[in-house]
Image (cartoon, rainbow, N blue to C red; front, side):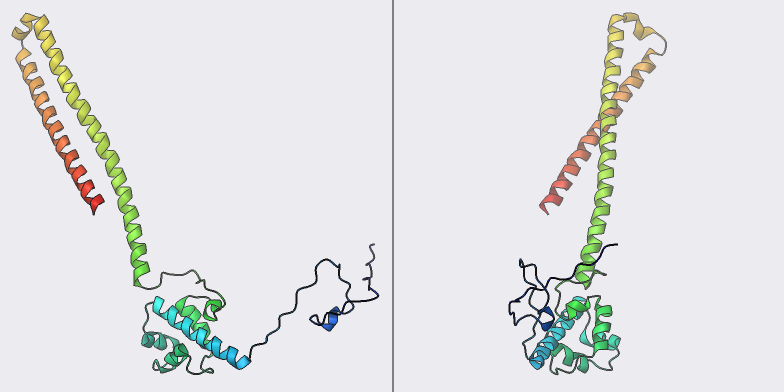
Length: 232
């Protein structure tokens, strides 16, 4: 069983008036002295007046960022009129900040108590405050949704364009092959149904040319629209 080692007490302790009396007989390691205790030297009345001013400013900032009028906020706090809330925000009375108001303000404005007291500049996370952040958030979501739709549409258009181009090329190949057959076989044109085959091939070529023309016009219009959107 381990035995606790007694604290070595030096014969002579350095006199450090900034340390409390409880450190007089505590042996230090000699490397780093303990930090000096916190000492408040400001006048409490002046400090209270400054704190009331900070609380008033922070309550006003939080209310305005929540897009609430002073009258609307006062009603939600339980005041009959905004005069008392105005007195708090303007810091006209150093004794005019009840603790329950700070607690309610932290919940209503969704901020930290540290922020209200001026101990922190950070807001607590919560719902967007005011109309503009909400609009920007909604706009960003709509934009992301529209971009996803446009990406899928672009992929589908690219696939259709590829197939139309391949179809037109195939129609030309079929027409060329038929012409080659007719040249190498002079009697082919007199064979039964040869005219029907030739007519169907010609119709296929016409449809292919029409599809290619429509595709070119579509690609031209989409490039124009995309350029206009980028310039805007």
